Length: 87
Image (cartoon, rainbow, N blue to C red):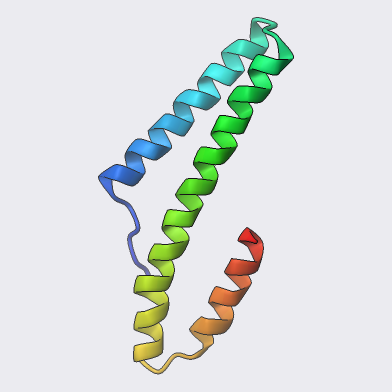
């Protein structure tokens, strides 16, 4: 079962991460201060975690619930496996 989790808000967050990664690459090639680079890496990591949380919640609220309603209780095990990767 395939569901699209893609929204404009999610696209904006992903574009922001792309911008951060590009900035980090430039900073590294310019030999910028390690602390500045680490700060930007932390911001990128935080943004990615927020995106993952949005997709995970959407997956549960849409995909898992729909699968259970259709009698597919294996969706719970699958969700549990995915959840373990994020905790």
